[in-house]
Length: 487
Length: 95
Figure 1 (spheres, rainbow over the protein chains, first blue to last red):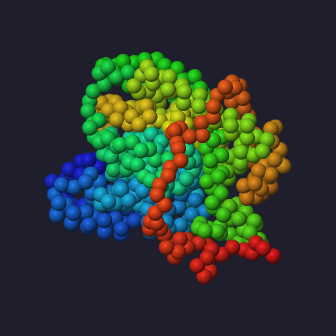
Figure 2 (cartoon, each protein chain N blue to C red):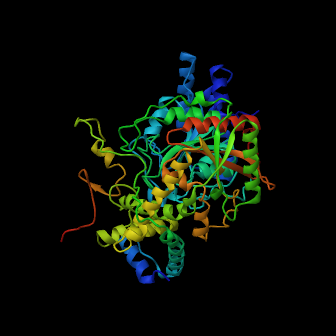
Figure 3 (cartoon, rainbow over the protein chains, first blue to last red):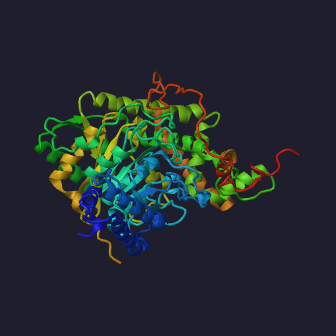
């Protein structure tokens, strides 16, 4: 089997057994990127030189120490909204075309401490606003399973890189589904941790009360291992949770006997693909056969979550993105006075979806509409959260589809933003409630596109969802599929 | 129609954005579609519901006022579109 097809934990074992060197691994992935990325466009910036340096350093460490941390020498990719010291970080926006962060995000410090090899920065919807990676100001990313289809978004570059063998693992961010939905579309594993579990320090802010960083990986074992690396309290993030981080690899056990799995009828929305619904129902039966208890539950405010999210996230975004004023960093377009300079800069350098959300957010926050829109949405958020609180009195985890459909064709929804927003129906409620969720493959459609299921956990119970996901994965083996992309 | 072209222009101004005439129709339709969609929230009774701005029971985070390393001036200015003598430079504000 080619090296680029292997999971990160398999590569880690090969490195420790000295059957391969980190330099050989880096070479294999860089070669794969050279031959395939012109077709997939997963990367905005490739960092071959620094990757090679890191690989050489990792090899020295392996020679000296024998036993190595999980990510030592393992090639991975990072979404381009996570600040990387000295490496251009664009958020897929013309606004940050030439932005080189003078500091590292907290997660980057943790990853580099392990001597991981970073291959580059991945494509995304501009400022993480979108669900298809078509809103990138540079180019769309293509789904490795079929290049005519989107990889999902906003972490579409990270998902395509892992699914296409252009990285062994990747980091993404999830504000309304941006890790889970692309993982689902690309047939890989993606986890959004509990809000506050992973430091947001150095993650370019979109909607601060919803954003979380998380891993995109080939399987659940890699997911648990990378979560171990990136979690933990950080005093530089004031919303960081002061909870101890368990060893998530201890949850990699096959056991769902007596696990109470809730199935909310409200997540099987109108317009859901028949094949997606069938796949989820089959997975439910599989869990039942493995000894889990299946319990019907109701989350009655689910249908209001998308509307609440698309008021709250833009409201937070409009505040966060006011920093792009052409003064301290980012691009500037000159004008006669300071207001025209700012207006010219923002008008020319933001893409249309970003402008739309900034304006929607300002509208929802503006005098006369604040109570009707913003405050109302905050109250709906409470109701969505209370639905989950009640459900988790009766169940341990909740199982749903990750997205109502499989990947859609590039260009098919880009002119209908509202239709695009409805794609987020199954993922945004978790962000509103701050809950952890994992997406993992549970089938393939008749047209060969992956189907994903989502397992939702109680706050800070990443262990519960990892255990359930691992049990399913090991029994079904969907994770063994990797996209065959040929030139 | 919930909002007019004038409303959109107004909110664009608040956002320091300019909408060109050829794009106005598109924004107007999208804006109205969106507001019509979120109108469903008005049907929900939230009379006795507290708003949730944040899911965590957050409190002020205090720490000792100790000096720690921070970015030096050159690094902080390294991405500035325009700078002079160690400052960010902007178009004249005060006449």
